[in-house]
Length: 312
Image 1 (cartoon, rainbow, N blue to C red):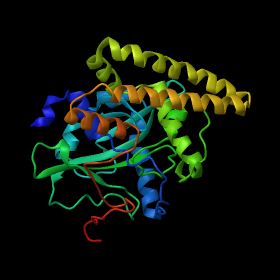
Image 2: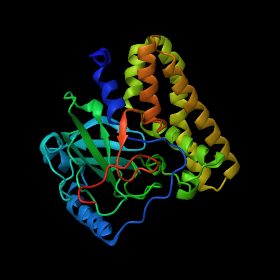
Image 3: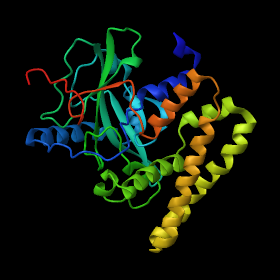
Image 4: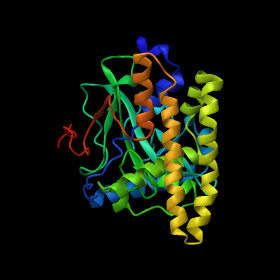
């Protein structure tokens, strides 16, 4: 298969990242009382996994490193391959740093199943945002269906596929209100771009290291100043916000976004062949939440064709 020309890390980064367009978000349907009760049940069931070491002892395996806007995925391959939807036993746990300590911020339910099989009934009501990954299955008749559930606040609601609040939490910065992050305005776009910039400032994704190893000394020479500037910006941003210096904070936000944009542009420029360029562009766009090509949107996805729950 052509895609095997690329490193497995790149394939995984491109395939698993589930962020939809990082634009304005439509209002999410209100949770039903039953859905709220189900979420409470999940919280109680996974409370024992507050420490990721406990998750590993229970068979969950960390993969892909820290994904911007999602955290680190700890997966149970046995549940993904053969599991059925069970509120109390999610196949994926998601951890993200909060004040330097990994915190269980969400879970996901992901299962391999035939394409002609109805999706799991999942949570009550229309809010859960199921989507599929065809490219993760070697069998053309199968795919992986998946839904996320955030256990911390997320601007897009508990079932959003990404969470721009996580980078603010990692950087110990106060996040803008959800309405601003969801708004189809220049201010909203700036807040979302800054969220991604913070994500790579605090925990650069593995994909960046892979690209630099392939790009050699020339790419490292270009990328290093931007990566260093991003890393150093975090403390300055926190200090400015704590002392209420909005002018300095806004200036630093602008600079941080500029370094993030320059870094991504440098990585995009590392590839020459059209096929590799298309692949890298897609992987980088998905890291930034700017694309969701190749992923089928399922119930709860606004503006997409709905595949209804059984019996609905």
